[in-house]
Image (tube, rainbow, N blue to C red):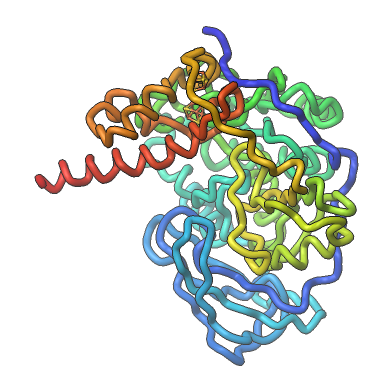
Length: 436
Ligand code: SF4
Ligand code: SF4
């Protein structure tokens, strides 16, 4: 099968820059929802003293995740903020005392079997750090360990600009492999594949060096072709297994885990320090000093940009994430979330949208879609509000990678239309379920 996808400029300007850890900001704003699933319930109120790692939000329900203070100081208020998907959520605003005093309760978790391992991962506050934000522990819940055949460690980092996973592989390689040992021990998995694009030679060398000292780990070097890190694409390209329509990697015996998430889990098992900080890439034409930063979760984007030397020009667009799948930030007061891996502040030239012209039926969007979808027909069906046709065209499979929009010579807003079309199909399917 031919690998579809596109070649994009890599712009990995910060790959050789080890992350720096600036002074903590004066305040942080920590939303109770930084994950897929139900928001956490706030456990603190105005005036409460907190320390780094104090639990400030309790997981609410099965698919949820606890939230911890990322600075020591005093709770200023419980605010309501708008998050990326446009919904409003409670957020704990903490005024930092600048001391970063750790919570006294922090200590390595007691882990001796699968159940205690899953509890530990849940208590750590871990969610998919590569961008998905799915609570990590859910991936490990099973009644039958034999379903876990292999782990694909997602180290592709195929989005332009972003190098935070690259830095994990260079600076925290030992933690990645301690994570491998933990999954071997508690999940009984023997086979691990690290999928890395070939544009990261130093990270590949470090992973190969460590893999040579560890049983069962292979490093799979992939062509640098976007979206190599898309879950379905990565699983196929590393294992030749095809995840069925509407299915999960586990349907073909695979757990996919982001390389930084795995390193974090290993570090949590050793220290008990929950997820309170993130390494993020700060780059883009408007940023004075592109770099990798380790910042407390909840640091505002305005503060992050200051930590990167400030802006050299007014940004025309600021993104959470990279230019292919990133989402425009609602405001520079928006906070760094658990799953933020980059802030890209684009100048006017980078952000200028090209002029849209009529479709010339060239088929490039279909030829470059990794999932062989037909964005041109999806756009037609969407315009006609034909939900049955959208269902036939499998628009719900679209992973919103943006390859179709990128390659379209007419600059049609295909991925944007797909997002809207998916919502139309969802409503139609929900109405059908409710018998309307
Ligand atoms: S790539 Fe653009 S111009 Fe070509 S068929 Fe698709 S929508 Fe039409
Ligand atoms: S249709 Fe969806 S999955 Fe296919 S290229 Fe476009 S955005 Fe990516």
